[in-house]
Every structure is written in C-alpha cells, then in structure tokens.
Length: 127
Image (tube, rainbow, N blue to C red; front, top):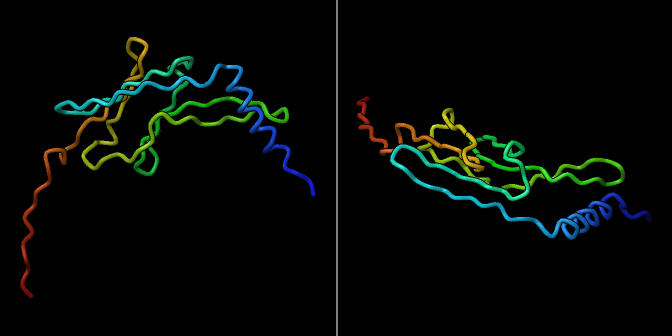
C-alpha cells in the first residue's frame, strides 16, 4: 500500500515554513460601530495590503490572504482567513467598500434602511 506522499509533503512544508519564518504573525483586526456603518480595520504583519482579498459570497463576508507553499514542485495557495462571517441583514451588501489608509486596510459596511428596525402593519384580508 502506497502512502499519500503529497499530503506528507504538504504537512512538512507547512511545518518548515512556519519554523523558517519564525511562526505566523497574527493579524490585527478592529471592528468599530458608528451611526451609519460598521468598520473593519485590518493589519497583517509581513503581508502587503494589496494581497488581502475581500469577498462576499452567499451572504458571507470573507477577508483573507494566501500563504504560498511549494509541494512536489507545485505551488499550493492556502487561504488564511482574517474575518469570515455572515453579513447581518441591516448591512447594505451592495455598498460594502474598502480602502487603504495609513498602512491599514479599512472595510466599510454601511447600514441599509433595516438598521433602524423594520416595521410593517399587516392587514388581515377577509374571505
């Protein structure tokens, strides 16, 4: 029976990469709440801000970057998630935006009209 050498190579590469780089620096993230929006500020030591990806997929906001590892002469990109959560109903997904300011990535999550609560009177129809 042949062992899966690719898996073993990958695990060894991760361990070696972690050791050679002195470990993985933890991302710094700050979530703030303001009157009209939420704000996520991110810093990741050793990672260029331009290499951080921001995606909304199936109502889930992800902020991540890739760690590149060579295994069996192939480049493998492992995602390292900084933030990965569902977007609340009161955030306007279409207006989420990001910018770089003073060596920080800033993601703005503006509120929509549901932020102040939703109210609707339901009329009962007679048959």
